[in-house]
Image 1 (cartoon, rainbow, N blue to C red):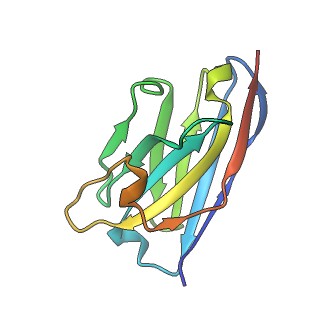
Image 2: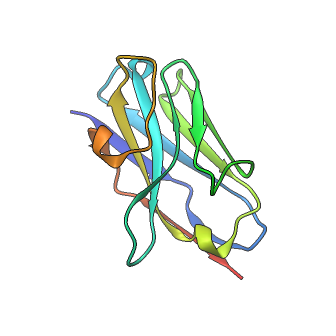
Length: 125
């Protein structure tokens, strides 16, 4: 049974930093692409960043240059370092996993099979 668990959210002032973690179990982690998504109240869930099974990354334009995604395969853990946070980054952040057959990652929600419960990030102005 696959489990995905996020942690690291919290309240931070504008310009501050947070690091989110996502641990996956019940799967062969090295074969999976991982993604981070976020959903603000009243808005659709949007893709933030993803990483394929060999470490290739993608960032949405809204976070490029501020967020850094990495994975530690020995710990089955994904990290999202978020710097220069803005109030518009406030959202519930979700981690997701999908088997990476083609050394590819996506930030489309429909492409992912396994989701965590989310961790709240709030950035005050």
